[in-house]
Image (cartoon, rainbow, N blue to C red; front, side, top):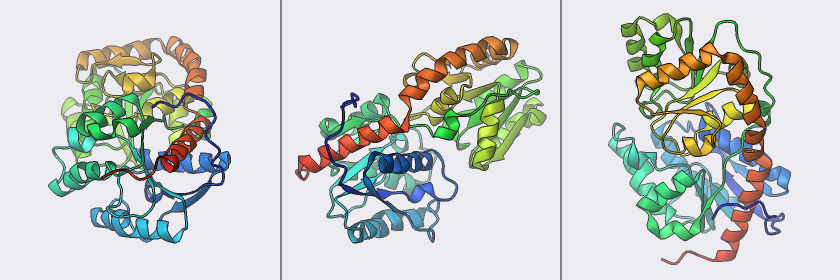
Length: 360
């Protein structure tokens, strides 16, 4: 069920435990989601207990499993809450609390064949088994809903589409395009993000740079090697994980944002760029057309010539691209406000508490 904007059931007195472990350290899209949701829920009047441990690195697989399966349910039980919201795509095997799970995507079952088998098993098949026991499931897009139903039809009646919000500081970015034009790509540099197609398109656009921001994986070295091979290594920059202020400054100065991913459950890069007033070029695949909603240039994900033409177009007419981005910005701010997302989440909590245990 998609949230329709109506007021949620009155559950302001409900006490919710929120799994916020991925919001610490080098938080990526899920961390951004958890941080925003936590603050917005509290502003809505919901008593949120934020559960996280500073002692455990969420990016080490063994520590992540220990957190998910032992420490998280134990902390939730001690917090004396009414409901546990597992917001990071995983659920504990055992808990006595009603659970709402956010399933951001099923990428581990679709596009992560190159990953280690134990990680694919845990974040893929095992996670899927746990979703069957959630009272309600929140997904980030209609695309993710359909993907989840395709692999787990039994949960179809318990799914709610709730778009994540975009942070206020991103919505308040003041655009001051840089003198040296660059295209910005935000997100973990991994295979499914498909950054290689943007690199291959760059030689066709003289004087344009590409700046990639986000945690680096071994795929980043393949991208560096490709840039060297094409003779454009001086125009491709991998900054890794950077402070928030630097991210905001990069959005402020970018000629455009590129989101060439093969698979995205939501596509935070598109939503953030639209809310910041940055022209967007995105792949015509997965959830990206849904998130863009007609306000981005859509390109087939592996069509190098089409990406090159899109770069040439925005580079050749930056004023026109910016005018269109300015028009899209107000629409994006309405669609991706955290206040409406929190109200929708509150409604999901009410449904979960009213529904009773899931029949085995």
